[in-house]
Length: 76
Image 1: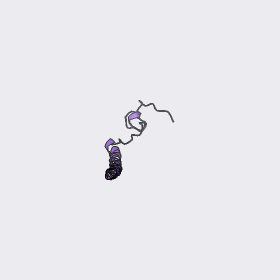
Image 2: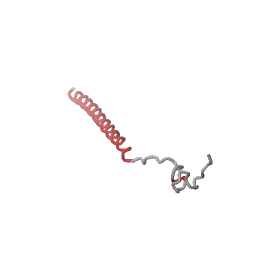
Image 3: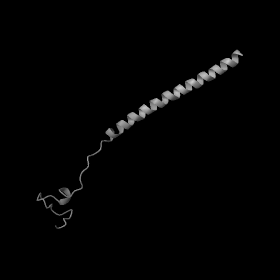
Image 4: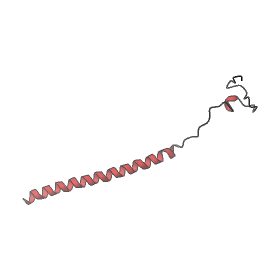
């Protein structure tokens, strides 16, 4: 079989150039960036909420612990 150049007529008989017909690089579907980023964004916001809630919880524990110590020292 003879090698066909990219700009030669396609051997399938379509009269198109080989590169635009059978010899072109297989087209890959375009990726929708929004569809890829959306799950990540959702995960990020869930993670952020979880982190913020835990930080608030820890701060509340610290604050109440400090308040208890101050309260005890004032009472003594």
